[in-house]
Amino acid sequence: MQQKERIKKHILLKHHKNTKFRVENNTHASRHILNKYHNDTIFRNEIKTRSKIDILNKYHNNSDFRTQYKARSKQQVSKKYKSDPTIRLKTIERAMNWYHKNNTLMRQSSRRLYKQRRRILKKYTVRQSHKCADKHRNLHMNNLNRFRQIIREGPDYICISCRLALFRNQEHIQSYFNYSSTIEKKWICKLCSDKIKKRQMPSRAIVNKLKVCEVPSELKKLNNLEKHLIALRLPFMKIVNLTSGKVSSRFAQKGTKGPLHCVPSDVQDTVTTLPRAVDKSMMVRLQLKRRLKYKAVWEEQLINPNNVRDALFILTKMHPAYKKLLAQSLAGLKM
Ligand SMILES: [Zn+2]
Image (tube, rainbow, N blue to C red; front, side, top):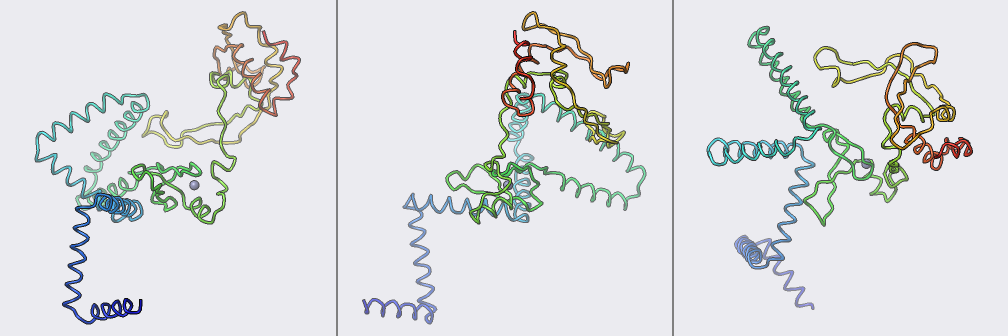
């Protein structure tokens, strides 16, 4: 034992004092590791996964590295695209295929928005170029570029604990790595992660009894006016477009103006005055007014009384505010 220690000490001393020995030793060690890397598959895979995780971590947490990495990969791809015609053709074909495959309603509306934005930008750049002198144009383009840089990412980062959608540059969100599957990207907000590290339950976590329960199918199939009929409170508010002119009113951001009225409605009365349904597909034309003596109609739609009753039955079973509705009158309603 003592001899071993002595040898160890001797080698350490030699390592510190003798440069030639140190260099030799280092090269030997690196060669040994290289050999091991080439021959031992388990060791190789371990090193590969470790470096992958390191780079992913750096990518998600270091914004400089991320922008550099993005710029580099963008440059490489564009270079390939410009120099190699086969790659260019393939890219175009893939994009066309993707476009035709993903022609869903959501995409259509987002494409419409994109085109609208492009139109507006084009209009403005043409107008600006007429207005400004060259020095002003540079400033304008710089600001525009900076603005584009900022709006490139939206609140797309969802915390796995509380499901809050956050911006990445707010530094409230950090990457979360589940070491069993490193490919999938997951995010956790700072508040949740700090709490979890202290071994406490984050107050806004989904598992902290904040999960929203499934909406029953009877309530899901109701249309707007049917929902109005069975609601205990009807809110009335004035909704205005916050922006004007540039974007069409359907897509503009909305806000409320003036007071908000919550009108209690007598659901039991409403439902008992509805005509008895002859069969399940019977529809009734219904008008909603703010007051009965007013002439103006707020909303007009066809409703299915049967669906309304089914929804009300479900609500009396699961909602405490609806339990007051007399079971008797409901029993009379059921066919
Ligand atoms: Zn969270």
